[in-house]
Length: 264
Image (cartoon, rainbow, N blue to C red; front, side, top):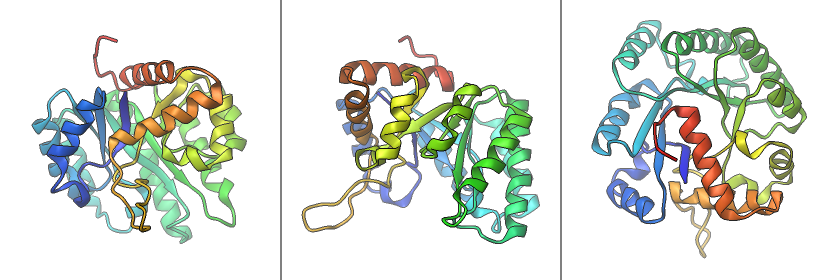
């Protein structure tokens, strides 16, 4: 009942945001976590949170894909702004070797990741982690990210759209959470991950406006937080439990992870 990760600040929502929020409420969505992943989107993200108080909450971070765009002075100013606003987590942050193949930039990603994890600990906020590996060597990004996480060990870690099944034992050993989105509908790997993860460690997400599917003509549709019903349905089928159990427990998990304060 809570979308734990989407991007309401994206331009796709500019003309439909009010209607989207209304539809989400009508469909039983209790809360939405919108994720600011770039410095330039922070003010807009905070405006959205203030427009929909106690319904839309925000995390803030720097997506590793943008490592070459961020100046040191901009980053420092951004972190100071984050300290002054009401956010519920730091993220998404992490490593992305898929879009960033330059070794020097990958090193800078790791340095920034380490700094932002330390920042999250100072603020006592949970972290939302993005990890994507290069197609030729998909494991290296996960190995690097997990090593950094285990060295810093934030109190609460959410692995956004986690799909690296071979690392699931490490996820379990570290007591981390994962979030599952609409991709599960067409992924045997994610279904196996869900099978092996305790329901208490799974959150629902949409990563909206992406993963909205296509219409009858093959045109891409805008994804919205309502699409958390897709992973909820798939998780229920994989675990052979009721949809309502998944719907309630994953919402409870999000409430706990982000410390939203809802009475559930």
